[in-house]
Amino acid sequence: MRLPNLNALRMFDAAARHLNFGRAAEELHLTQGAVAQQVRRLETDLGHKLFHRHARGLTLTDTGRSYHAPVSQALALIRDATGALAPIVQRVTLSVPPSFASKWLVPRLPEFQARHPDIDLRVVAEESLADFKRDGIDISVRQGSKPQEGRLNCALLSLVDLVAVASPDLALTKEESLDLPAIAQLTLIQDGHRHWDLLLRQEGLTATGRVLQFNQTALAMDAAVNGQGIALVPRMFLGNQPLDILWQAPRLGDQGFYVLWPSAQGRAKTVVDWLLRQ
Image 1 (cartoon, one colour):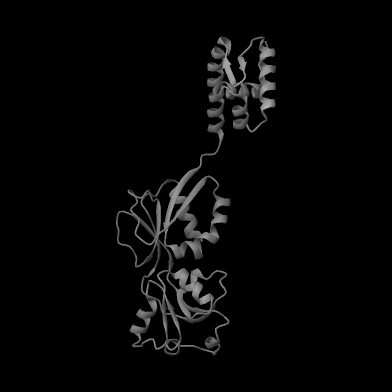
Image 2 (cartoon, one colour; image 1 turned 180 degrees about the vertical axis):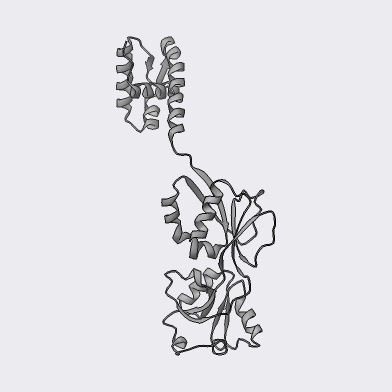
């Protein structure tokens, strides 16, 4: 006897599990008539009746019951063998500050996905420090001074290169040059890092204009885009933002964006290498 059609066996298996041609058809994304027809053809080829048909469903005949067990096992073996040939997708969880995520990382993710289709990169945007074991984090990017955690791998992604930016339409920025004393008289937009306060204090200056406060750099940038004042933000966040650079701030020591990860092996290191290449 020649081997039965594989599709017919799949339909028989689904019908045997559901004891209903309609539900089997839903699982296989076929019509009920197509499933019923293939099962009838299988019965004809085998020379055995596999189901008793009833008004409200099906029951397996003794032959159908004994035939279904090995057929189900064989289909499972085929699925497992095929799955073993498919590329293994491994998840890597990356924890980053929200503004870093929205202004720098997200625009670059399509390139990462195209280059590394075997890695499912899960991005968690949070300000708090990540607990690698408790939170299931593989890699963390944080802004600040160089971390002193000796148990973790650490690499500098970029120093914080701060620039004062504003919308091109902001009338007060049309002067040929602006220094810090002049900027201090304008409306400033400050984020949670409070860099305006620090720089003005270092120069013995005080903001004489309004100071708008936001807890995230991305929000400060959005306010600047909308013409609400002058924001002080990392240059690396600008991308294609419609903002003009008015002034370059002095470097703040070792303040930067640092990549931290516990293991130098596996997919996490692949993601770290990609981040550093960017």
